[in-house]
Amino acid sequence: MVTVIVPVFNEERTVDAVLRRVQACGLPNPEILVVDDGSTDGTQAALAAWRNVPGVVLLRHAVNRGKGAAIATALNLAHGDVTIIQDGDLEYDPDDLPRLAEAIQRDGCPVVYGSRYLDPAPPMRWTKFRVAVALLNLLIRLLYGRRLTDEATCYKAFRTGLLRQLDVQARRFEFCPEVTAKLCRLGVPIREIPIAYHPRGHAEGKKIGWRDVWPTLWTLLKWRFLPVRRPSSARPQAPIFRFGPTPKAAATPACPRPATTP
Image (cartoon, rainbow, N blue to C red; front, side, top):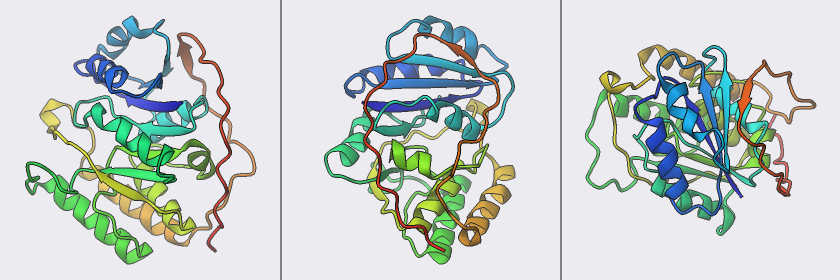
């Protein structure tokens, strides 16, 4: 089973189409965990039609807590041996999801990133967002010695056991740099594969912006020096609201624990 986590915040115009495309992308019986992260628009109304759909579980934060917090809420309920992150907009193409899962399930990769800048067709133009991603990639190279083409991609696929062992503490968009930093510290290989990308601007609802630059930089810097270890116990979770049927548990093979880097 593949678990697709969909964190959503104010995506009333796109979330229904995203879920339909995830269902139709070719993953066999995916488990789709949707977390409405305190939306204030019509997202809840758009999700109402999905409440009793088999394989789809709707969760909700009463207030906006951030993308990382939404992923953490869903991860607690994930039954798939592979977990993939899918945003609630249409910048990323769900048709690429099976290739991400296949690279883990067939090729044995522990982590796969979908790169927007790896052999794109047509070529991606340079924007302020691409410049920011290039600078993040450079910082990863300088701090961790790892060459990546798209550290900030949404499409990150993990063996679920490994993602849980990372004990991600980020609650907002720092989720991406934290997992990348910890994977680098633990020596876990990251494979990149090319994906399609259809960028949108802030007028269309894009959330990330320049205010997220400093938390991202700080996250990369601090996890270069802080100890990275497996959590001894789960942290308590804030209350959530749950709708829809509970998926049946599937046997999840334990992911071998990587050696911790001092």
